[in-house]
Structures are given as C-alpha cells and as structure tokens.
Image 1 (cartoon, rainbow, N blue to C red):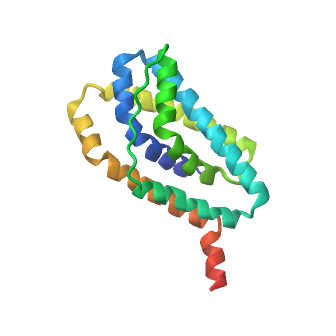
Image 2: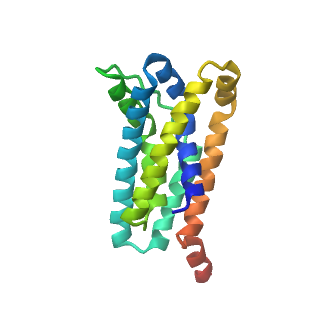
Length: 186
C-alpha cells in the first residue's frame, strides 16, 4: 500500500471538510466528532474498496486506470454542496454531514486507488486512515480558534484540494499501467 498516495488522497478529500469540521467541533464534543467522522470515513472507504474489487475482477487493471480521470474531473468540477443536517445525536450529525459533503469525492477517488488491493491492504489502509481522522480532528480542534488559519484555508484550500485531486488522478493513470499500455499501442 502506498501510504503517500493514501495521505495525499485523504488530505485532498478532507481539506474542504476541514472547515466544516472546525464548525462541528464548536458545536459538539471532540470525541463525538471523532467517532462520527471515523465511522463515515470507514463506511465510504469500504464501499470504495468493494466497488474497486468488483471492477477489478471483471476488467484488467490497465483499463481501470481510466478511473484516474475521475479525480481529475473532480478537481475541475464546481460543486460545493453544503451540508445542513438537523439530527438526534452529534455522532449522527457528523456522520451524515461527512457523507453528504464527501461521498462523491471519496468514492470517485478511493475506488481507483484501492483497485487490485487485497483485503489485508484494505485493512492497513483503513487503520492508517482511521488514525488520520483522529489526527485531523485533533488538528482542527487545535486551530479552531485561530482566525488566520481559517482565513488561509478559506483563501487557498480549494486550489490546494484541486491540485491534490489532479496529482492523485495522474498517479492512478500511471500506476494502473494505462499510460504504459497506451504508449505500447502507439
């Protein structure tokens, strides 16, 4: 498992959610935000893995490299959907908020990254990303009162997220063997 790609993927998907996470931390306890966030990340990661696994059984990996175009598409797609959820519990609110904001990104980006990976690699990736969610929540909690950090994220967060998406897409195109296969055809 390429942990640098996982890290880049996780940051790209969650950079826009980071601001929302700061707002959620102002409303709810840190532990409840952490649990809701971790459950949502794991649920979407599992769905992305299963989709990638099913596609990987029917198609050669180099063809699935076309899925690398999805993160690139996501980088240029203007779709800032805000999640407003009224719910019964903090954990549920964070879970539903994350799903409503990040489902498309997570599925379109993690499915290509997880194609061809074993259940063991999925487990390693899940553990790594669940630890990453804890770190992100703690980081958000540490900076939630800093106005200059919020300003920086609001000012440059979108472009940084788009750059990460493009880099992930390019990685998938090359890692899958699609580019090498296309070069052979030429």
